[in-house]
Amino acid sequence: MTGATKRVVILGATSAIAEAAARIWAAQGARLVLVGRDPARVEAVAADLTVRGATQASAIVLDCAAADATVEVPRLVEALGALDVVLLAYGVLGEQATLESDSAATADLLRTNFTSAAAWCQAAANVLERQGAGVLIAIGSVAGDRGRQSNYLYGASKAGLGILVQGIAHRLARSGARAVLVKPGFVDTPMTAHLNGKGALWAKPEAMGRTIVALAEKGGPVAYAPAFWRAIMLIVRNIPAAIFHKSKL
Image 1 (cartoon, one colour):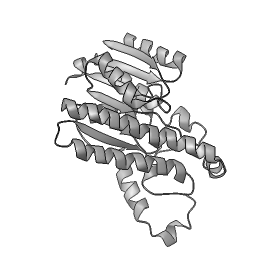
Image 2 (cartoon, one colour; image 1 turned 60 degrees about the horizontal axis):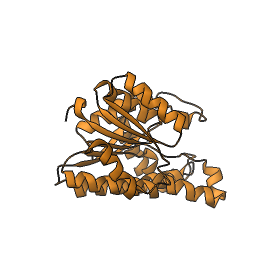
Image 3 (cartoon, helix red, strand yellow; image 1 turned 90 degrees about the vertical axis):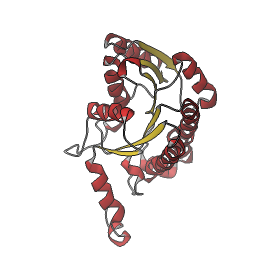
Image 4 (cartoon, one colour; image 1 turned 45 degrees about the vertical axis):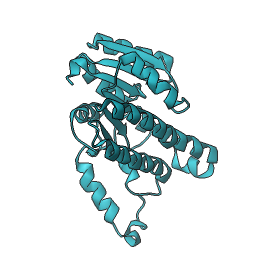
């Protein structure tokens, strides 16, 4: 489908990456349903996208991590008539040191990044399979490629999401619909604002947005973003444990 008729649902629409992609779709005249938990913020994003050319930019205030996806997805379908793109863009990074000693924080991270995300992906996949068209795009992370002491709980949640989305892609392959896992490396967003040492490996949300919009047209089932992370993570995955365990990654 062309951008002018594309019907897009964005889960976690106030994230920097999601907003960057939404601005491109808006400029193409897409119809957008924006889901976010901060009422003022999601309404502001919707208003901005309308100004930027969106045919429709509807704001839905919802905590995706707590909502029942099996109930909410049919409502989203009703709002648009059908789904051309479902972008799952919400998640939390967490602080590894805190997570190691706080089981409640760990449970919350896993519920947000994997358990709830899995439910949304499954519900969206059911719709796309019935339609025989459309694409589910989920934002994972290169952190899911190998467990590292600095963020293995976050990485584990993204690894689980990655396997799930790849399985959905396999399931949908003969239906005409698709699923794509996007694996960003470092991205300069509010979620990573506290991290120091940003340099050449860091991407901007705008670049990620362009990648996601392109993947909505073709590509997958796994896309590293930027693409050079595929080579980097190939090396990281294959470093022998005896050497890897001496590092402080």
